[in-house]
Length: 268
Image (cartoon, rainbow, N blue to C red):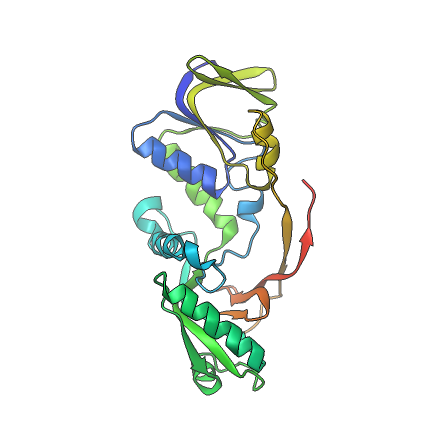
């Protein structure tokens, strides 16, 4: 790799890094995207793909709404739709305590713009007929949905190429050095120089920040992801629960993706 100087070097080619490089390039910057694997080849390509308001922190709802609008209209800015499905969402309560939890969450998120309302069990079953009779109530949001995470990388890779972003996978960065005009990114005995630097390493951000002598602890939490065999259609909404981070959605090929569940602590 030559020592071409870029306006911006982005390290980490997941959704955040690839998206940042794409929009910077479209704004006129010369960008290089560096990753040890490839575009959306790690956590960004293996997740439940949920576009939900109900499991989003209340103060982040405005960003979640913008993200939902972008992904459900991805053809306009990405040039391809990575199987994004817009669907309503239900979060289920099975006890009085969980009903109160849903009421509190819905009120907090409505203050930030989310269209979430509490509905009765019978109303919830009219929306999703297959629900258990043990459901006591549910919070309903018309703005929900999901994407096929393993297809977002292909779509972003094509958009990045069209925007003339230099993409270098299989480029594990070893260190970053500050220079008078910016930064030198060093890996595999090669150097990439850029005036600006974006670190987009997800859970690996703590180690990446150490390159610049910045110490910020990053907690690594691991969510489960399970995929069922293909079955007949059994749901038409994104389903969550009041008692934890769990979502279910059925894709067009019949598989049901179950995201969340018991959370574990991961190593990097």
